[in-house]
Image (cartoon, rainbow, N blue to C red):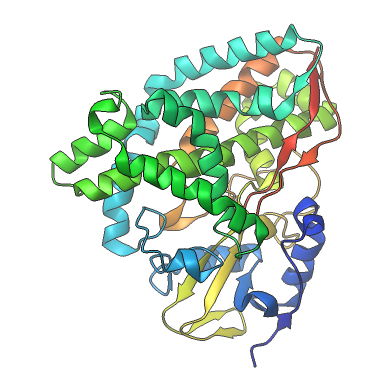
Length: 387
């Protein structure tokens, strides 16, 4: 028998709306805990999560990162589902336009879009914190930067949301998302290189293939890496940022008085909101998490969101405190598989905060509706107004 073990449901509507009591129960049960109904281990404490993410030659991503075998056995290759040298090769192709040096060139444009957005919403009596505020920059940036044709840009959000639902257990949410994911994969597979904006990120992948750094089939599949992981994660993180600032006017006042807090406010919003719940890995040799033995061949879910609320590392984790030094949060993962778009997400949040600090006196928010997703955490909508 595998111990310690728990029989809890992590994907009910109630658990998705408020997972933190369950995460605490898991953290308190052990360094790694066997979840009976999912037939896998979960690692949830901050230090153990970082150690597991570092152990990428033992806990492999190339055998799939989902909580169901249907997707794990589908043979999908991308930078997330790869290891070692293959991962380095694919990741460097995807990362090239999202490195800090490349992002410096687009920063003025991101700031300009942020200023326009805040001005537009300030002129409105009220708006939706997600649809009108949080969606705007990631969708504008990604659709513009990736360089997909119009019909692809219109469907990106649906495909992105579907890709995270299908990473969970094969429950109703995951099953309902399969057709949308298939549609996205089909669209990318049939995409003609000539349809892409020549200076866009997608076209850059084909140039990397021309140069022999990746092959043509990989270039085509990697286009989806720009669409799926980079949208919802940033959108949900940005929504958390706005919601927390609205709930805590004293924190917003600190930013207005001291712009040097902008970066740490972004980190704290990502820590407390943790847009991605978890990815899984497969143990290919025996692995020890603290005093718990994980045998070779078992699947391990790494709970980023639980680690970001671990009171062993972040005192009073449920409190939004922009002066907390949360830059070591694992909302974007850690180690070789750290989110390729993390720098872009940070840039977008910093530019929005900068515009808000200059232009706004008050931020008001109302009660949120949770975003129903297996592997993403955040809000579907909430009322907001700027003053």
